[in-house]
Image (cartoon, rainbow, N blue to C red; front, side, top):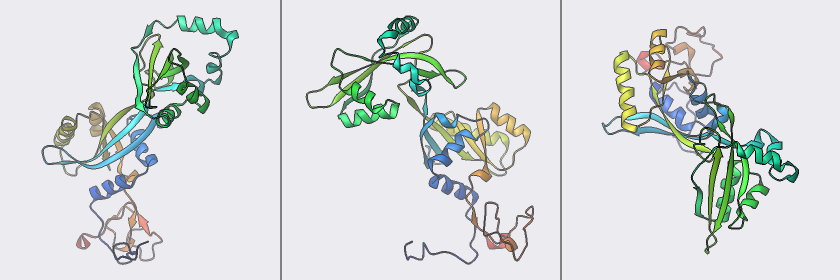
Length: 305
């Protein structure tokens, strides 16, 4: 650790940072797993853990009226996966000539097809290969796609999320590669499907506002503030971090499309002194020889603030 007074351990009693600052600091320092819990463990949950690909948080996001939102989550939700990830035998059907009648029968059931879409354009081979690997293709499959001649297509079966958030909508994906004279690549794809068109190649970017429930604010004013955040950033999803809340408030917020997250799960533990703590609900409150060193619910006496 640097030998600088800013980084030296503090052994004397220090004032606790304001709760909102504590939460923003915790979000700024949070890893992907901790940020993912905001999406998964809020009520109602925004998504499931295995569907979150990448996630990041921006803290103190400004909006036009001079205010700043506590945080905005940017996350990718996986919508499509190669079928062989759930059924290893599926991909084999495309390469086993004995199964051609079965393949043809399955393909004939697909009534619709999408337009031809670019996956990557004008990128080097290494970049294109990484995109394919990230999407779920094996190294052998990725290399085969990159080496396709201009008149060839790569076929693979995929699953898209259904309305129950399970991968059950099966569709056929065709991929082709074009080689530019400078060595870069264009990879395009189109999908054949039975009902709903797959929304993306693999994942889509989503956003969610994260804000802390203000103290001593009416329900109407709180909703007004949240809706102003929504309007300013054009983001509908909201996660409200709160401590205690009544059943009626909870139902009202959920009915307004707001997810609730427990404050205790995000506040960082701080150096504590039970003898000088104002949290009278704690069994260790006032104890001189308390074994507690750090605590999430430490509240120093008012005259220490």
